[in-house]
Image (cartoon, rainbow, N blue to C red; front, top):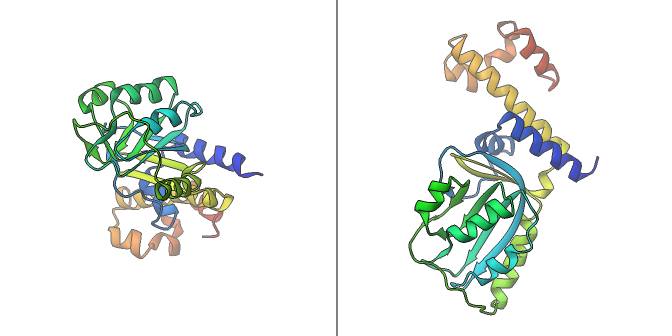
Length: 235
């Protein structure tokens, strides 16, 4: 099975089972979390393949230009370089991406403006913060060092998977889109089911459940369906 097939299965599994950014980070060995971007519109959950674009030097011209060539759907990651205290864009660009490019969610490594409208429209957006002050719309040449870094980051982000919710954003890098990671995601779901059963039904402490994992040495306390699922992981 090729990586595109695995990627489709992984996205479908995460979406269908609402596997959180927390569980994904756990499945990746406490890695993959994007530090910085926070939810702008609480209550959102989205997962999809990443597309990458960027702005720089306090201009959003490249964001407009690159945005025109986006494929429909997926998660958009917008990077900013040397934009300082200025917003990358606001409602107009967000509407174009979310409605007309059918982007499922947007992660902005920078500031946004028109926060009141973005919240009213209830777009699925994660960003570093908001400000009334926006970037200019001028075609400034890309500094060579910025272009080199942007191309490096584009190669890293494009084609990966992002999972975003109220807790934050976790990325499954391309090299981790494998059958092994898919199996780990499945196991995280099972482990959560078992832990909550131990806590809510058996009234065990979190120490007994999470640290000691007493259910592994005494599987008879678990429902048969959970015991059978554990066997799939040789536990």
